[in-house]
Length: 120
Image (cartoon, rainbow, N blue to C red):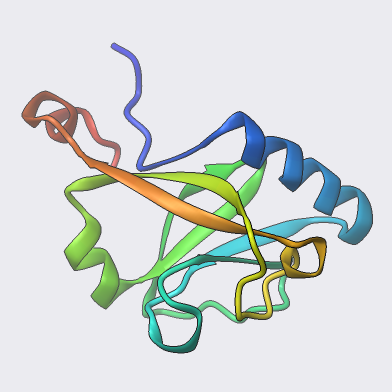
């Protein structure tokens, strides 16, 4: 049976991640919880954002760890997150912002079968 992933990435986002890796080295993502930057996936140099015991590792995209706070995870645990890219400058410290694009998430609810197959 094929493994079910909690976080996926579009080809457009893969291209951007690869470009950012060339410029900045190893990367990591943290799903923002709102406020000033909305609810956007934030891209940082690996280790630039300090994760702690209140963060959950959802998976990796392009060998980059993707985290979310435990509290936010409780709302999202029944959904698959798909990282994508859109035109426009976001209001954040994420590495892609100077390029005039920003990462966004799309999501869909897991089916009952997928929920049973998740690697928690």
